[in-house]
Amino acid sequence: MTVTYTARVANARFGGFSKLLLLWRGSIYKLLWRELLCFLGLYMALSAAYRFVLTEEQKRYFEKLVLYCDRYASLIPVSFVLGFYVTLVVHRWWNQYLSMPLTDALMCVVVGTVHGRDERGRLYRRTLMRYAGLSGVLILRSVSTAVFKRFPTIDHVVEAGFMTREERKKFENLNSSYNKYWVPCVWFCNLAAQARREGRIRDNGAFKLLLEELNVFRSKCGMLFHYDWISVPLVYTQVVTIAVYSYFLACLIGRQFLDPAQGYKDHDLDLCVPIFTLLQFFFYAGWLKVAEQLINPFGEDDDDFETNFLIDRCFQVSMLAVDEMYDDLAMLEKDLYWDAAEARAPYTAATAFLLQQPSFQGSTFDITLAKEDMQFQRQDGLDALPNEPHGDFLQRLLPVGASMGTGGLLARRVPLLRRKNSCVSEESMAASCACAGAPDGAVPECGCEGPLLDLGQPEPESEPPTGPESPAPVPAPRAPAEPFTVVPLPGTRGPAPPWLPSPIGEEEESLA
Image (cartoon, rainbow, N blue to C red; front, side, top):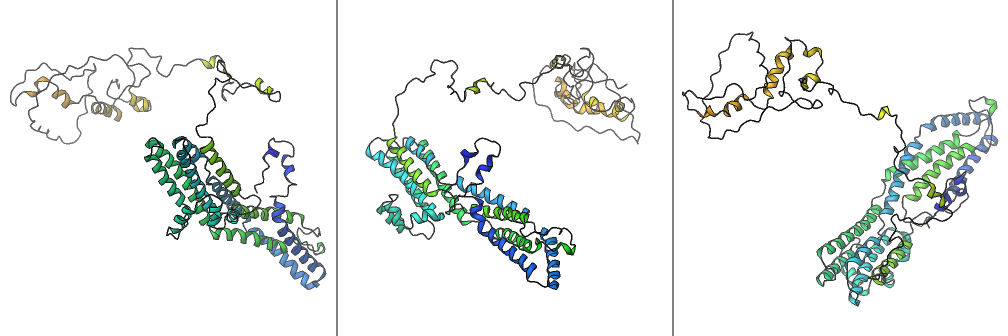
């Protein structure tokens, strides 16, 4: 039932799509010709009544009605609601096809995990795939009218070979009021577990892989059931249909040709057939027909899914894969390019010109630069002398004027910021001294003089306090420090490379 025209448009050429305009099966003409004739007939009937039936007074009233309908018909948002609706329906249509329960992946897992060349191993593989095919038939006969006409009862499913009579008894004796398309999947799991216990499935990893692939197959069956159950909201479909029908109902009156002698605006020409109104009807009503056809692709329209074909194809291919093709391998031979350093398949005379085309290397492969543009440039600060102290990272971030004043706020705050961010604090310097463990009241004899880290620059003097002098805080008594080992500090590091920023507190600059 699917209309395929891919080969007709394989190459883009002049008027390529014009070849498709004369096709009848699956065409817009086949869908819309009845509605188009009905619209044209009603239009011609109103036009004939206006010209030959109405009196002059009635004609004046009809002309006012025509102008009114023509003015306000454009307020109906046909393009807006119809465009979103058709986009939603097409997206839903393609997702429904992606949810078709195809057995290709499952049969490859079965043939690779369920082993045994004997009759019982063959029985295991065929029965597993028959259960999968049965589940697909049960769900498709629930959503597709074409499949239901092929298998109207469970007896037809049994006679077709998808289910045995014993399995039918178990299926019908299962007390459930819901759709039982999932029952063969449970039989599949039970049979796979039995094959695992018998060693037909050799390890738990293969058993897990088999059940995971079955769950993917079962989830697709469930998605088809939910797509059939949960439709596009009815209110959306009603709004779109009413918008299209009401618009063209207004066009039946508003697009009538009036008597040019009356001097109405935009009514200078008197015709019998509204060409552009018919084209507009063809496009908008055809757009609605597209949504009508795609909203349920499991019917019997020309472009609906070939569900019966997919059932036949999956059943035959899966049985061939797990039975006749099981452990059937050709003799291993060296390929034609075994000793070739650069393997390349031959081309026919019709495609030999492809050999002359260079391979794609990247979009920037052919860019050329001038010789001076390819020279590396030194970064900022590389021209400074190696022994020259480098600017503080914070000062490089600030404007030049903010760091030049000696008595400014920056000159007072930067030393404090350096002390707070220094790697070694005053308490840590005191604790690292060997005399820190002296008892209270005793005069420590220590050779530690000054701070542990001597950067070679004096500490800036802090400004005298402007307010009333506050009493000095009394230091709290410290507990005796634990015995520890004095670790010598590393020596002074050499100057950092000029392209690295100096951390705060690592080096000091003169603010003068």
